[in-house]
Amino acid sequence: MSFDSLWSAVEQVGRHPGTGGYRRYAWTPEDATLGEWFAGEATARGFDVTTDRVGNQWAWWGDPDKGVAAGRPGVVLGSHLDSVPDGGAFDGPLGVISAFAALDELRRAGFVPSRPVGVMRFVDEEGARFGVACAGSRLLTGTLAPERALGLKDADGVSMAEAMTEAGLDVGHVGTDVEALGRVGTFVELHVEQGRGLIDLGRAVAVASSIWPHGRWRLELDGEANHAGTTQLADRDDPTLVLAELIRTARHAAHEHNCLATVGKLRVEPNGVNAIASRVTAWLDARGPAVDSVRAVAGAVEAAAGTAAAEESFTDETIFDAALRDRLVRVLGDAPVLPTGAGHDAGILATAGVPTALLFVRNPTGVSHSPAEFAERDDCLGGVAALAAVVRELAGPGAR
Ligand code: GLV
Ligand code: MN
Ligand code: MN
Image 1 (cartoon, rainbow, N blue to C red):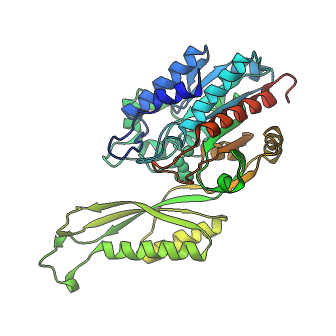
Image 2: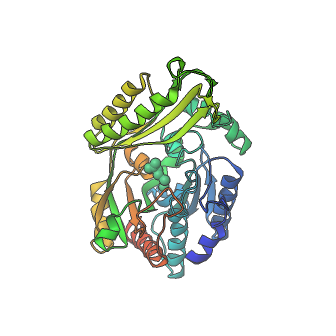
């Protein structure tokens, strides 16, 4: 099947008619539709579809257990299908669609893999619903404890356990899946670039070198609800003033420590135009080249808020396997190598010891986590060709 028909099959799923952005959150009906699409595409190709203990989906071309038995665990391509609120079309789906399209290209060409090759789809990469980034890969690899994950609540007070149960998962079974992971010899995620690196280089595809450390924190600021028209300024306990200070501090501290800091999500209660807020919840996202500097930003924000911040997730720096990276750079015609500040399941797998690579496809807007995120069709096809070349290299005759 062509890249275009794969693309058009999911293009409308979870798309908001007003904003044009995607709202594809973990364990919702939209997510289920995407899961059915994934399973359908895999089955149509005769691939063996399995769901691991977390709900991540795997589609195998070739028997992965034979691969393991022969000491040749498989080559897996994939990414995620969930989105941030009003996210773009490419962040996640591009990697899954390109994986199917690449294997189609190889099958058409009569390529016979010398080891199992798989396509996979991680659940809940963005953490838009429950707060923890890369929850699917963290649970899979054991860096997120199921007891903690299952108790996380969404904005409506629904727990992850309840959401998973509703989606048909057995929550008693959720946890590290050593068997599923053991089938992965090499993982390669293709992703739309989320910055301007490739535009500036004039190239369509790059290989990632590293991912910055990244933390997410939640701060609860309490105040006292009261009337906007009768409460004297001196009598107010207004948490939005603390919020303003916190946001300015995040910006200053990020500047000082050479980091990036964002307060992009807020909850104001009771959220009335003529009522002083009784409580504000603010989420801080901080990233930077070093763990200490990211933590310093969070510390400065905590000090400004006068309250401890709850750490929702923290990811140390990821350095991708250098030998694999260099090999793919060669296979892809001396592809450029770029670091990134964006988080990926590939980073979680790499940290868990799976030889992993991350490829980027040029994004002419340089914008991501927004409907303006984009990739030209030719560049997408370049990404498909890159993945096919990677599979030839890693799973071709005589591949190591
Ligand atoms: C995921 O896209 C992240 O970097 O937050
Ligand atoms: Mn994203
Ligand atoms: Mn992504």
